Image (cartoon, rainbow, N blue to C red; front, side, top):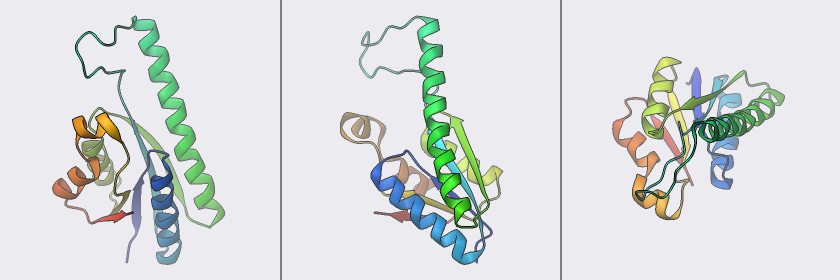
Length: 147
């Protein structure tokens, strides 16, 4: 049925439910899993002049985000491998989450993308739009959306 499943996670509670389902589906079908966390390239401000950082501070924040993102996917990998699912844990730097999810699924020849129905809340969601909706709209790979 499926050979390789990509599960996108942001570490949120709803995202963890999607991860659990993706692991179960991979175990059931004998598929391998690609766990993906997309982290931003640099701190952003949505209001002009709202965030001015020195280059060293930007580097420190990017490193922290990358390490936190890696910890999220490493936990997915640990959980999946305890259930016998071969897993690759990836973090990708991108400011467009949906594009990174689709590109990673293509690159790793995944035949299913699993995501939560939503992740970001509040102003970020209003300004960025729904990443899951973007993946659904633009992916040629089937997408399983979980609530």
